[in-house]
Length: 416
Image 1 (cartoon, one colour):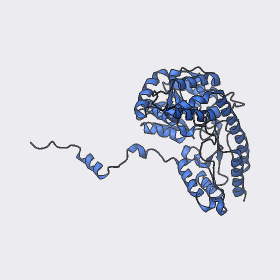
Image 2 (cartoon, helix red, strand yellow; image 1 turned 90 degrees about the horizontal axis):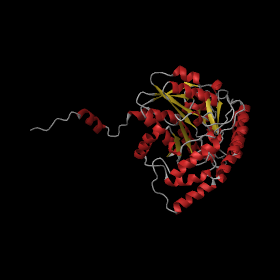
Image 3 (cartoon, one colour; image 1 turned 120 degrees about the vertical axis):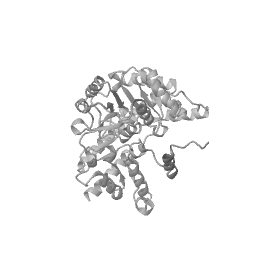
């Protein structure tokens, strides 16, 4: 008898011709231009123009959203003890029970919200949290509504899960945030939910709690899910008009909240975050975590327990106050240089400013400042389409002396 015919010859031939052909989802995800700018700044920083030994001035990096503060001392010491005591074994996929309890306790004492530890899933950073969440909730073709501008990776998580991020223009009148009216107007048969961030990257603005409550109610009436990224919430200040800072978790157990140890606690490279989930989502997310990465870093989890010691929290509050001082310095200096800040930021460590007085678009402006002032900034193209070509992001996560130097350099170039 002859061999059974292979009905997949065309596909096999294509694979043989190009064994490294990429999945289509890769083409649907844009480059992360923040990182491309960072690479260009690094290359220039290695040139004679930025070498003090050759009469140059070093590059000042105001482009990356990473605090210049590292983990509090007690956290570093806890990590040392963890390694010395060889406590590096796998943890449960949902995280150390003690850490889940500590996070729940922090919600109670800091935000006045009661959260059952069983609803908390510790993740390998907020990025892993969002990946788990989109894989658990998003079907191919589903739409997730989010503001334009917003953090680019959030929409790419949706894309990677087969869904579509639908960006809704959110201008200065809305503090660059969604409101209930825009959500209700945009909601359609493919809408699955909303993904918000308060405070926001790139704008540093918060959603007024009353408006957030209206958004959640609108989504709830339509059977959708509300996801709120609160990774910068610890760095937010009370607002004169919007009232005290509050967590979205007070709006009901059906919300999903994402948070991280990276920003407020200064643990960026430790890659540790968490989700607060509706009870019905915990088991599905746990199953995905078990299969995708087993658990978050055990040493990072053991160390993070020390974040909630009173000494660590006092240190983080001192740092929050210093970020606020930097913000009060940077915003008026930008405005004095004809770089308008349409909305004062009230959280995170970002300023979103208008570059039209000095350049055709913010990409050209940022490249020009990188080359002439040796100050690295972030052009707006990463963050959406609604006015982003005219805006850039400055991160004031660097020290106040560095910020003084950077703004003086911008003034030298722009006024020269």
